[in-house]
Image (cartoon, rainbow, N blue to C red):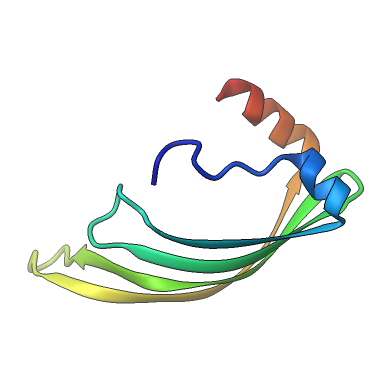
Amino acid sequence: MESGKYKISIEEIENEGVLEFDFDDDIKELENCHVYAELDFASRGDYIEAKGHAEGKVTLECDRCLNKFDYDLDFDINETFAKKTLFLYLKMI
């Protein structure tokens, strides 16, 4: 995944009400990792709410025996971000 390839603007979320975002890509920083996610971003006053589901597969290495193994990813996402914090973070990148 290229840095900055997937950027979502707060203004876009506010204009849409709820912004639907599908992610289906490899994460290059991890070995053999492909993730598919369906996310909804919503403006909630001073906050941005992100909800959805992600699934995929990643190759990991056992700390004990150092053998590699495939690990299935399957999890729900329910996060809230303060807009002021996001503005500060976006100015830094």
